[in-house]
Length: 248
Image 1 (cartoon, rainbow, N blue to C red):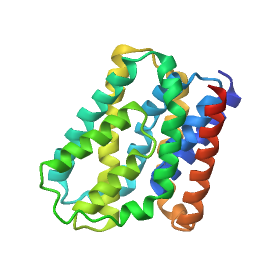
Image 2 (image 1 turned 90 degrees about the horizontal axis):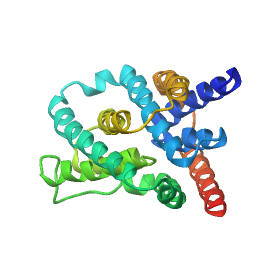
Image 3 (image 1 turned 135 degrees about the vertical axis):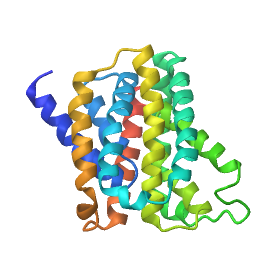
Image 4 (image 1 turned 180 degrees about the vertical axis):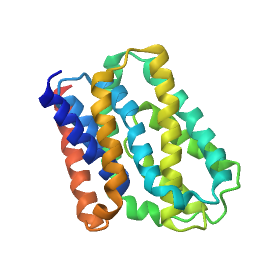
């Protein structure tokens, strides 16, 4: 790996951290970058999941005030996220790499559509279910299984779920989402470290970029209109899905 690739991964990581904070779909920046650098889809997915821990770390730097008073939620939903991440990673590694390569275009397309539908998802209301219902951590755990398996748009799904059952401001919901995604990625990372080789030389610059991007994202993202950003990323994701379909 040369300095040019390190620079590309660092810049991609910064974009990943910022997009992950602002639009909730970090993987549609980092995952295509890893593919473009020649990594097979499965290796790129594993590398991406490990590096995204940097996005959580960077996001928490600026989100600490929004987590005050949420210890119970962090513990309950964080445990569900970690368990789901472990299960998702185990499912991923239990299948041949070729199977993941066949599935990944569908996952990218799904993630892109979910991102573009985020305002509608955010508007959903679960009138019969509130955050203390046993179904909520179960649903969070199921989303985390998807997060451990692939992950793109898992954050959007978590925000939609929490927003429907919690009576709280969006900033606090988003901070909790960062914690849950972090525990899911951490659970998946533990499985990956134990079971399969990790591309640490590529993880490192991508993760550093993620920390930087997520930590500086709030003032930058506030100046960018959300809808054009979200739609641009979603359309680009559908384009990537099309390319992956054609390359199968």
